[in-house]
Length: 283
Image (cartoon, rainbow, N blue to C red; front, side, top):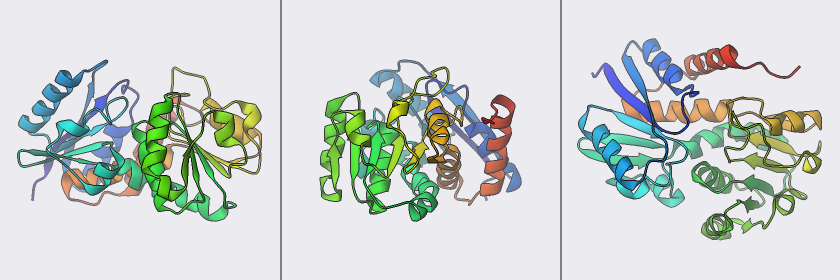
């Protein structure tokens, strides 16, 4: 059995990522070695991405994760796509299968497990999704698969929101023309944009639109308590930080890279240690 793995992450900015700690700790608990390399490249064009992926293919990587802003850009540079990634049109995990690069999407599977407990205890109603980029697409498909009452999608790029809504029109997804339209009467709200990720201290949704009868989830985890979640908590809303999505998505990627099921507890402990060293939750 293979006992050494080289994996990594392509994106920008990623210096804050907890992924190296999670993957390397999960491997240690299993008695194997994993080196998780951050490949931080700003403004990579198509040729740059192709060159990086060729390096992944040739340099002994088991695979790499992909994050903002490249989850959609890598799709047509790969040799094959898993069915979920093909449907979503975004990839966050690339597995080296021999000489082939195969794209997967563990954002979707990770989000399903993260959100199910919250959905189970919340009133049924439409969900507002802010952001139709790579992670937004995955979350939209995850929500649709869970059978939510409807999805209202807003993105600053109206064409992206309209395209995603069109992909899921048979699942009661619609393009919202404003944040206010998306949120009005929604049972839940998901931020799938990088707004609120440090160094940004902005919020994708004005505080006045938040209220106690909704739940609010944020895909951002740096910091865990984004301005959006802090405001939602102050309004009495149920909230979900990006912690569980990050851990679940990483665990699913680890299994794809290694063929081994990681300890979620070990990955969670590693994630929490990284967060504790950087951030403190609100009082």
